[in-house]
Length: 365
Length: 110
Ligand SMILES: [Zn+2]
Image (cartoon, rainbow over all chains, first blue to last red; front, side, top):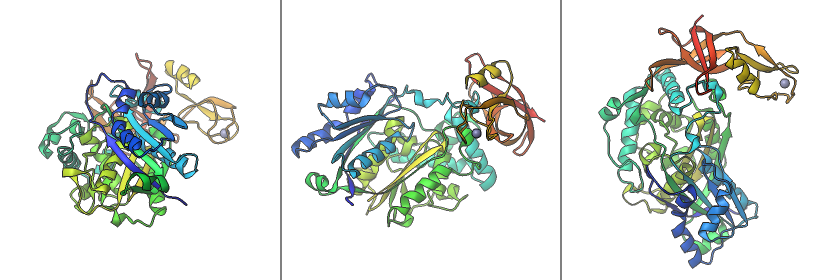
């Protein structure tokens, strides 16, 4: 069976304010990719727009803005993991033979309705994501002795990484004390433990093997895909709040599809919506034992969230999964500049939605 | 869902239970998520439950909140008193719709 490649990638600067519409934002990272396509006479067979913003016919409007006439045009939403879901859909369209190439564009604006989960009535008036994050954190602290300082260290690391990322929203380093002294929101979560919903857009171009050879001598291969949908509501997420069940399942599924082992992963972009969620992801992705995530923050074997994660880069919901994938592609191609991880051969993307009710994992090489 | 909210607006907690297979449908909907029967009945539940985890919110006015498992379903609600710990037996003391028409649930020690 033919392999599927990511042959180009681009991301725009993530911002707090914009006067642009989602479709206008979405055009930005596509410009350079589409100029390259013109140079190599490559046709775009599919356009998939990942966004949580409610824009009817969004991908087709985007296609028209970009002057392309794809066979397939679709808008996709699955909240915060819309981006990687769009990549899986593009993968499937190419794998089926229906398309040879597919452009996946993630774009969102800060005001998206995806930021509060009003449909989940089991949460009562506690609709903001920070409430479930606090409950996950309290369970982890009580059961495994994870500390607020360990959580703060996640923010320190990701902000430090974002300092080297010119597209990141937060380019100011912070200390453990800064995080500990930032405004307390919901015990034990403080302002600097949280990612920030912002404006942003990212794009990747996928193709089959044949097209990949025409376009680049350094394609990134999609080696493994794992996904799991446990529920939509927080009340049905997991019997134990000490793990994210969907991440465990997605990770196992992705690794079972490839010969790449966890120990061979050099670089990872994982879904640090809150610092505690990075700690849980270390464990649920299988990088460390259950309960040891707090200590794992200080490890040096795998580079985690080199672009700054969601905490440092910002979190434009529908763009995040695509932006994470752009970073891993740039790392694998040696294009990450000051953030470049040495000798980078295999990478992982972990993208999650709504309290870990669904997760998606990609393994790339 | 509408029936659930109608009851809730009158301070009553009723959830749909399937007449065919007795599944508690939570969050509520008008179809059984086990056997897909539409023969469902809005039913009372035992209001006693177990506190799974709790926290304190400093967003707006300070509030204690907790995740409670009650007759097999889970809800996040306000804890009307301090001193409750995970495992504490609690009961649904009040429920309803607030001024924004959002559901609220309040638990106290049983
Ligand atoms: Zn039934």
